[in-house]
Image (cartoon, rainbow, N blue to C red; front, top):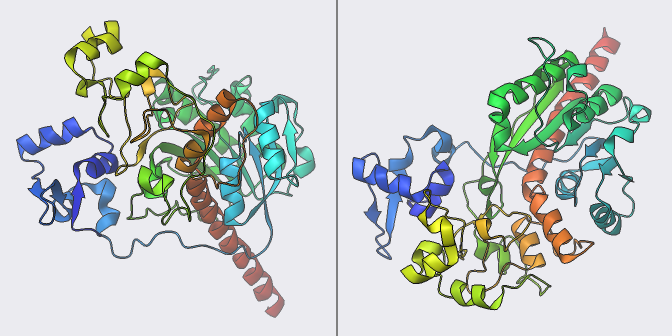
Length: 419
């Protein structure tokens, strides 16, 4: 645990804005001090103990997930596989990919190029038959989109979800009967359709014979990812088997854009050169005036009005507009387009969007992982991916769960033989 945390670090850890922290400063809820070495405004670690969500920082026993060796071969099926962020992370944790399904042809080409031995099925998930894998896979995963259900009654049943992509995820589970089902999604899933969507998913998995753990929001910054990304994890365990799944424990070290793009703990060399988008001339001239870590409000007033146009007179902070990243902070959540005006992701020093390899590093893809398709397709694949390091920690939790289960089964067999 560190003695002090910066304004940005505390904002990231608590998922609040810097403005909120400043209001808390004025009200006395938090009391910043000057760092004894550099004089920067910081928060003493002891002052953060009041926040339950970051209590792990002060728990000496809250060690980060250690690498777990699979006791035997475990297999997984992944739906909506994209460019392979989740699948690669699961592989790093020791799970074997039995089948991956993805409809996007460029993403499928990405998967096949990097892992020729993976069984990649390109096409609509609705046309995939999972029955040959019944009782042959341990885990089914998928990042299905949020879609509202049509409720036929008070309790949502499997057939009520027909027509949604979650239905196909549930169908894969129904047809294969894995020990563990893992769904991942954006944080908004928890409030989608006033909470009806998530409760419907829990109801359906329960009908299929799975106990669903309370959904957890995983902050990527606590799982070796230099990015302020959040994912909701929905975990179902086959009922009646005594399965125990522990969500990944948080790391106490936060990584930054500098850690992603420069040689250090995360990568053993500086980021390699690669293609990337460029700004039009006038936009580049304006963005050049934005300081590191700044955004449109740091521009001279005349340029604010020119860049923002009608948005200048509307409410809201619009902090993603004309935004330049900082070497010393985690990156904002990557989108499918680094130069989109609402969600700008400008390099800390150079006046340009992040390149393909920079984008990939922020998502913790290894430099050897190549992406197929046009430049815009590659950005989209990377921006939609689950960060590899976060996926690896999810995989470690799954492997630990399976190891405990199969060890228990083996012990029961030995006990019966002795008896």
